Picture 1 (cartoon, rainbow, N blue to C red):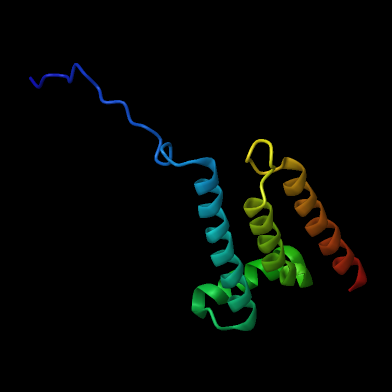
Picture 2 (picture 1 turned 90 degrees about the vertical axis):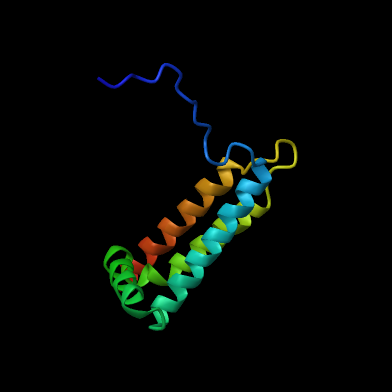
Length: 112
């Protein structure tokens, strides 16, 4: 019969050793890549996966799919310009970006 391990190693979170600014920078670069991918998929230059992504965005947002890269870029700006006192991203910026995206998408939907 096999022995059970008596001492279990504790696993630390993957990005625990990074500063909040580094985490925000990584998130900003990732969102920038996503915005570029959305733009390329809208133009038809992202291959098969881009075509499927474009179809999904078109189904979800209608003509508002053109706002998906802009929404990603707004989040990049929000991540790269954190609050001065805490160094964290302001929740009001994120909520404002989501609200602006929703309102503009709704306006485009009603104008069609």
